[in-house]
Image (cartoon, rainbow over all chains, first blue to last red; front, side):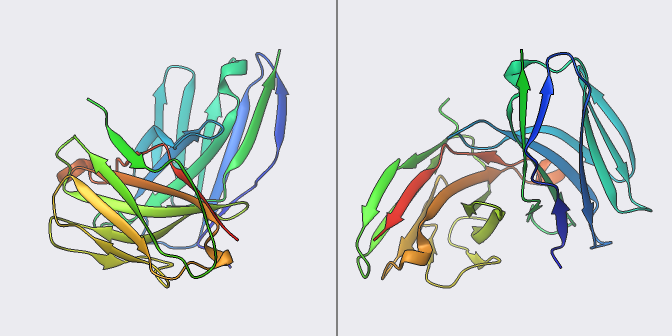
Amino acid sequence: QKEVEQDPGPLSVPEGAIVSLNCTYSNSAFQYFMWYRQYSRKGPELLMYTYSSGNKEDGRFTAQVDKSSKYISLFIRDSQPSDSATYLCAMSGTSYGKLTFGQGTILTVHP
Amino acid sequence: NAGVTQTPKFRVLKTGQSMTLLCAQDMNHEYMYWYRQDPGMGLRLIHYSVGEGTTAKGEVPDGYNVSRLKKQNFLLGLESAAPSQTSVYFCASSPTGTRHNEQFFGPGTRLTVL
């Protein structure tokens, strides 16, 4: 079993929809939780960064962490075609920024 | 400010050939990383470095070597390439302290081993 599980999709939604992306994990030592966005043939870019449990909001994006359930989510409100990308969850304990990534979810937002 | 750059962007090798991938960052970051990305596998850490002159193994280090002779550069070497090393390789860097998990990625190198 992988330490981090992420539904690879693909996920296709109409413009304006609310998108929910999720990851589960098994390592209780994870304390830092991130979401990266990766456009086709590009490197990942950091989208959201949270520490421990709770919510964080940044514009149309909200990240949620539930450590008791070992479950994290990314919500995208009013989705746009420019949000079409692969979304990768990533997690870390305390050592030197070593991240463990999920497989990535391919999202397409169609006009 | 170019961020993280990678050279080359594309490469095709024959089995048994060797090559070196170069990563450079201009953000004065202490930490640097090499990942490979394969379909359905996400990003997997190959090697990483916590400072100039130091390197350590990641999740999938076999068949690769690295060097960090200068703080801004991190080299990934394949001594005898195998078809299983066909992948997209990403380099990343991050600062120390409370932001050590904020990794900045390069554009990637697409490697095909025939």
